[in-house]
Structure formats: structure tokens, C-alpha cells
Amino acid sequence: MDLPPEISAHIPALCSLAQRYGLHSVSIVGSVAAGEFDPARSDLDLLVDFGEYTDNLGMRAVHFYLDAQQLFGRRVDVISVNGIRNPRWRAIHEATQVPIYVAA
Image (cartoon, rainbow, N blue to C red):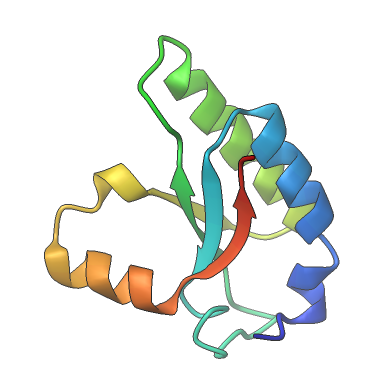
């Protein structure tokens, strides 16, 4: 899928953030993944696997969220893969996600 230039221009830096904060994976979901991105109004939805629980998980999540918002200059919603309890929503996100980063 071709991402909008407002998003694709920042993918390398987003991958660097994911690596810095020890994330296992990051995918784009929502309007960007559905091809319905509106540069003037859309936020960016990121589906993130934070990996195993650690004492600093909350701080890593908050710093990733804040840095991603600053990077893209727009609102960013960070959705934890482990936080999706509704099977229907999980299936929708898994079917439409655009993988961006997977830890080596």
C-alpha cells in the first residue's frame, strides 16, 4: 500500500523510535490503512506490540506516544495489540494493518 506522503516521509524516524523504546512491532491501522486519510483532519492510528511486561513499560509507552505525535505533527492514537479485547476489533485491525516495523 502507498502511504500518504505526510506519513511515509516519517516512517524511517518512526522505526527509530520503535527501536529506541524496545517495541516488538508497529503497524498503521485506521483511516491511513483504509486509504481514507485526510491530511487536514485525520489522526494516525498505530497498532503496537510492546512485548513482555517490564517495570518501565508505562514510561516507554508514554514517551513513544509523545515522540510519535511530535514527529508527525498530528494526533496519534497508540493501540496496544494486547489491549484489544473485542475479537471483532482485533480481526479488523489484523486484516487491515500496514506493518511498518518488526524488531529483529
